[in-house]
Length: 279
Ligand code: C2E
Ligand code: MG
Ligand code: MG
Ligand code: MG
Image (cartoon, rainbow, N blue to C red; front, top):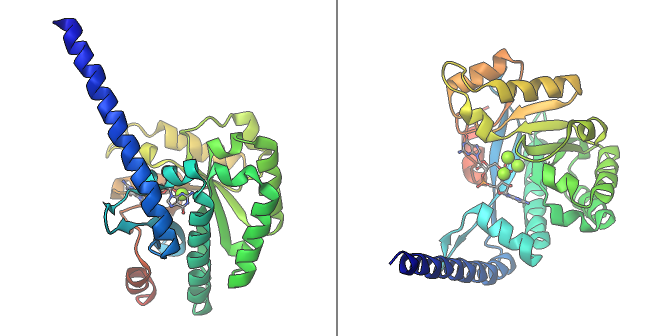
């Protein structure tokens, strides 16, 4: 009987995998259409300086609701895009929309907003082309490179390492900042960090959400903040949802924050209404 049960489990497991694979094929096919038909939209999540809750910039995050599939989680369609090579086209969508939008917003602002865009490891396969494209997008939209930020994860740094570092250095020389996203969840070794062309560590939201009201479980964010300070890097906390998490961060002199406590990612119209028209 036990054998039979196990046998059934294997069958079930295979069915699950098949379903998952079919779903991803569907996502790929629909995503291709969505890119062509311009159905992908950039949402903007505010980045805040908690000293006075000042808006300092936005992170561009892609959103896609498909006619057939409904809302597709960004993690899902991004990973499908990475596997299928569609990520280049998705990135172009994000860059085009976000750079031009932020340029327009900055036209009316005394203090310009910074724009952060997420880059995938796959995009660093041809670093020279990537650098050229970034420069082209920025100059086409007339967005100042010093107001532009690249977010990459630790795994991107380790993938194709020498080439990636070269590309990041060139971007930095051009005035662009580089942030390590989801910091603490990957494999960066301390010795690497010291010599890498990076400007900012972005503490992963899982560590921020571990911080409890009595500041239990705060050792890791505290250690990352101290590490950033010793390496003279900036630091930002993502996923700040609770007032006491914000307080903890301020106490530890980490003033840059992002999270639902301040705002969810918003589409252009909502962002303008909630953040720009009010200022
Ligand atoms: P990420 O770059 O780490 O983005 C932060 C994610 O955390 C976003 O999820 C955001 O909506 C969510 N978030 C922000 N504040 C909070 C909070 O207080 N609580 C909680 N629970 N979540 C919060 P989203 O938009 O679903 O994006 C997921 C991931 O998809 C992103 O993680 C990024 O890795 C990727 N992604 C999104 N847009 C792009 C893109 O244009 N290009 C690339 N390569 N990746 C993208
Ligand atoms: Mg990010
Ligand atoms: Mg992140
Ligand atoms: Mg992430």
